Length: 415
Ligand code: PMP
Image (cartoon, rainbow, N blue to C red; front, side):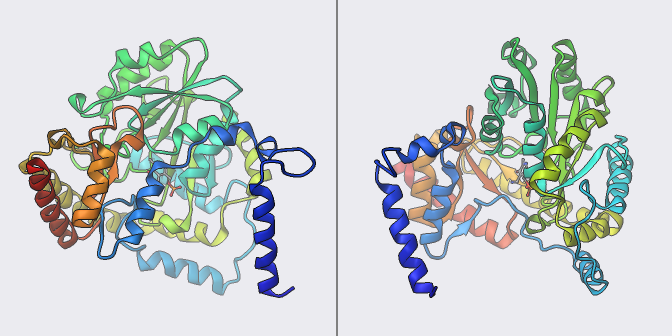
């Protein structure tokens, strides 16, 4: 079949599917999973599509490092290819990788996991989250999601058959959850809490004392916690503490992490899970049927990142910290109330002083000043009245973006 014929055929298929009465009286809807139907298209997409159509945009929208992966990591992959290491690996990942992860988690964050039975290499933190939720949820189980939150949590809970229950945070507490708000959201159907510190989109960071307060509630109500530690390497004022290191928490904790953010390896798609054997061995049943294993070449790169990557991580961290300080100060100076985020590479200033909704602010800023940010309302409860700006851009780009945002804020206050 020629390519032109193929595209003609797909057009025909699209036309048939678009019709309501598709194939002997069945509608398209009747073929779709009701779980998928519950998922709304991502609110962030609309902005990226819009931003892509405008020329000369400075994007503070995307959540990924502007640094490239350190060349020594790429070289490790080249060496593995020269040796033709191109096969499937063990389902949980190369043993050498799991040993390095075990050593790294222990030396860096004081949590101890067995490489033999408690660590799984995954396709990004994204698959790690999906795998964890699908392993623990039954229909109707409720999962507490601290909002504003990473966009994928609620849809992934729904797809796994659970019900996401938002726990709202606000700028008044620097977007840290109040223990009483967590308690109020718990009922007999609650199974787990998803925690993300440092947080996307707010950059909020929970220290050991704050985690201990949450841990107490989890123990009292016998809940699990999925802790998303993808930004653990990027904390600026206090050292990172994993909730799994707190007394009594290890057995009820599933750690999600990965290489995308801290090691600037988003496109490599490698993440990992550390969880007690009882959970991780069950996760492997899903993993072996859906993925077989994480990409092998990526695993060789990750081994190098863990062995020799800390200096590069430290340089990136210092750089982000400078940019954070600059962006927070500048936004506050122009009257956009901005808390100091303890980690990740996002700021989440309030735009209430402009009188605009977060969508309108983001849309007008894009059209008038060609700066792309993400409206806070897409991140769930507590997000309206804010925008998310990523400072993972060069300081020159950030300076220009801040100049444009200032001009926009001044003009919109005059409108
Ligand atoms: N968790 C959080 C909080 C994130 O921000 C992201 C990526 N934006 C992920 C998980 C997924 O990361 P990846 O799949 O690239 O490891």
